[in-house]
Structure formats: C-alpha cells, structure tokens
Length: 354
Ligand SMILES: Nc1nc2c(c(=O)[nH]1)N[C@H]1C(S)=C(S)[C@@H](COP(=O)(O)O)O[C@H]1N2
Ligand SMILES: [Mo]
Image (cartoon, rainbow, N blue to C red; front, top):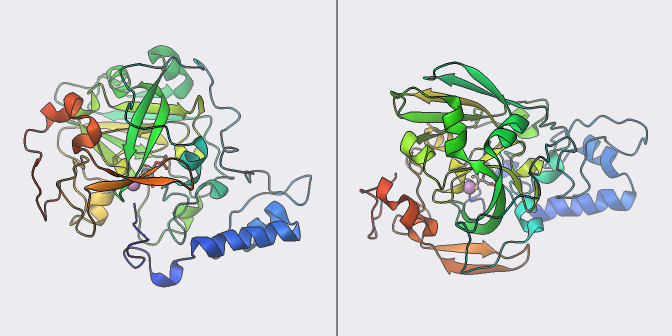
C-alpha cells in the first residue's frame, strides 16, 4: 500500500525507513562473511527487526530462513488438483504474464514488514508456518463451521485463471492464479438471506510475523469486506496457488482473495476467519486513512488518489522490466462487474473516495 517512493513520511516515519539499497548491501555483506541465516537472525533485517529464527544442527542456519523468493512454498501445502486446468474465460490477451520471480519478490504484506523497505517480504517469512490451517465461519450463517483448506479444494475443485492485478500504488502484474471461485466458498458457508456483507480476517500471529511485532501504526489482524453481490460475482476468486504451484508465503499462503477489478488491498491474504453481517463493515485501510481509501475501491482511472494519478500503471514484466500502460475502468473487467456499480464515475473527478 504505502507509496513510499512518493512520500516516505506518509505513514512511515523517516527515521524508520531503511532503504532498499541499504538492505541489499547488508545481505551481500552477510553473505560475504559466510554467516548466512544466523547473521540475519542476530542483526535482523530492516534495522533491528529480529527474525527470531531457531538454530538447529548446522549452526550457521536458521531453520526457516528461505534461500530465495521461490523457496517459501510450504512443503505441507496441499497439492490436490495440481496441475490445475486453465479456465479459458479468464485470460489477459493484451499483455504477457509477469515473471514468477517478480510476483514473489515484490510484495505488500504488512504483517511481515511494516517499517523500512516494505516490498522485500520473502526473507522475513521464515518463522511463519501456514499449515495446518482452518477457516472459521461466523456471524449470520445457518450454523457455525470450520473449514480445512484441503477439504475446500476437494469440495469446490480448483482451476487456473490469468488475471490483471492492480495495486492502488499504480503498479500492476499479470498473474496465473490457481484456486476456486469465492462464490463456491460463500455457498459452503450457508449465509442467512439477511446477510448483506461478508468480512474477511487475516492470520494474526505476532510470533511468526515480524511486521505485527514491530507495527506502530497498524492494528492487526488485517480485515477486509465485500458486499454479498460482489462476493458472489464470478470474478471473485480465492487463490490457493499461482504459477502452477501452491502459494508462496509472501503471496498469501494458505489462501487469499483475488478481486481483479479492485485495488490489491481488498484481496486479504492468509484468511483465517469469515463473518457474515447485515451492514457495511469497516476495513483496514479505510479505518487508517479514510480520506484516501474507501470501501468499494474499484480500479478507476477517473478517480485519482489524492497524491497520485490512477490513469496509468507500471506493469511488471519481470523484476527489471516495467512498462507504463493506461489503467482501465474496473481493471478491464467492466463486462463482468460493471452492472454492480451504476454510480461508478466514468469521467474524471477529483476528490472522490469510494
Ligand atoms: N493480510 C494482508 N493482506 C494483504 C496485504 C497485507 O498487508 N496484509 N496487502 C494488500 C496489498 S496492498 C496488495 S497490493 C496485495 C499484494 O499482493 P501480492 O504481494 O501477492 O502482490 O495484497 C493485499 N493483501
Ligand atoms: Mo496494494
């Protein structure tokens, strides 16, 4: 979320910002010394964040420290249904897929990092053990339930969908997700007809998530919500994997929301609780900065963010190649979701937050 390039003092105090180059040179320094994981654990990354890894056997390594961005797929993640069949209804014909490495090395995930270089999440996921995982279903439902991820995958079945992904910070990616329609999960929850909205809460484990331990401005768990008609739209998706594999931890293992017509922050990662309610619920970013973020948060090039344009985006081809492209209304999905929003501005309007 934080557009730290534009304004490092926005919700990160200047003194807390450790620049990306400082971080990388520290990693290089550690590698040069040959200390590997233990040095990273002792020194911490991002200016004194202790990763808290446990050392066993080889004294030079912390058990959980990943070797790279693709080394964070949990070994015990369910592989049921893989390789998944591609659903030809969801493709992005006008542009190539973003490289897998870029999608898993440039991330937003404040439970892991909420100070300093916000994008390099993967090195901080070593202590996080996503599995076993259950999802609690509460609120306006026929009966309280708890779901197991593997059971959901078996029950609903998984598919691959290539989708546009647009962060509110004006960067974007094109990602082959794997998972199931959110509508399938909602149906399995058996909500009562009086439910108007559904809330999603992310995993909240300070011991495994250094960004929670070090958070100063945020109150975890991360929480998001949708209207029922949005949640049951065919485009709303629950990802359990990407690029043919289960989700890496930094991308939201064990499962996360993918809402391709909305800004990325609506897509809560690592969901552990779902709750049905009968009024519009508060959401994480709207609570923090109500002048900048609304509830709907549909991708809309006509509505600039108060501090930057939303008419264009920086699309990642890979880590080094980024192209500037125009942003489309509803991120190019007006045909699927446009009817849900009769009031969505279709002409340039300043100062509108929705
Ligand atoms: N729980 C949780 N979910 C989250 C976030 C977060 O900080 N915590 N960041 C959001 C934001 S701002 C974006 S852009 C996407 C980023 O997903 P990616 O890292 O897989 O690209 O995750 C969203 N989901
Ligand atoms: Mo974002």
